[in-house]
Image (cartoon, rainbow, N blue to C red):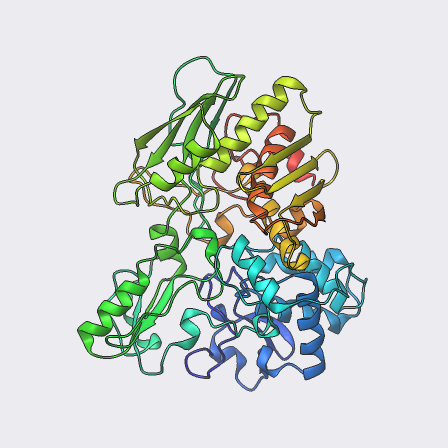
Length: 520
């Protein structure tokens, strides 16, 4: 549909795992994941993409997503819109039905809640408090750039899949390299036919915590595992001979995950070598095997928050100097040791890599030593240099829990965008503490290669989050990183300051949750 019928709204996030939902289309008005649907099964049937939706329906869903901040980079949005809009055929659905439908999708940016709210608005189930807020696209882009941190368009075209992602603009007839080691082919169809498959799977291998805890007597210790950033758009670029390669960061920064992607340089080299336009695409399995992971660490702190942290680094990875320098600025009194380990690449650019975990742990040491939190509850108040502040109160004692978030980030610019990023930060932080991780074999190769093996919290497992934004008269600053750290600390306190993250997974599979967690 993308390459031969010219429908760029149909995105490829995992093909052909059938697990991210980005390529969802309607087949006779019923949602289907197109990457695992053979052409022979749609012969004589009607296939609809967002380009072909009735104008009034399309406008209603675009308005709802824009009003609630339910789309950030927008890569997942067209498939989600088609999935949720199809619920109208069977009458007004419940919020439970909306969340159940979202199990077929992945969104890494928004934290799900704003998507559920958008669906409720579009389906006429309930109004939303931000639905009447007029949004200035320039201010929204400014706020997104602070939080992302990359330029990000928030206009209606984003919700319809026309945000200008790298692969969407690839010229017809370009050579295609599909995967990191494959030979170029004259088309994507030919590339798929000749490229050896690295079949994605969800292994039964247990998660590991590869960095040992420093020796000594400590008030708190913490080990983290291998975590997949799980940005949804796989690395992609294209280039004309002698030209500038398309950026894989076309409408968002993947929270640092693609900042050092080798794909643009590879596209430029291939175009120069072949004398024609060249297009380079990573499959989902390439992203997992070759993309950067959060550096695993082992942290040990004294009651006053001083201590040491051992940070895992793998051969061939970028230097972690930036993360270590940032940590020294934010957490004086915590010594850093780099430990070479066997595993996939690690990166210093991922959101809060190393320093966020340390700041959260320091907060846990101080708070738990001063006034231990009630079981299942946690509260954190975090202020970062520059003035950004966030408080997070988490109550996970009933159901799937609830959280209240307050944010101070200078001038709000666009409250809808800041709220959306705050919700996304809560989602990412809870996943890091509770559920996210991938298994790595003894040779250091990731063996969990599917979307569903990453442990990302689905919409049905997300606590209900209330976000309160405080307008400031100072210059606008990034606020979602403060929310991220505060949520890490609040979740760790609620779980009793555990010695290892994630806390709610057993064995190697993402769905094997302890009994207490499965009740939610």
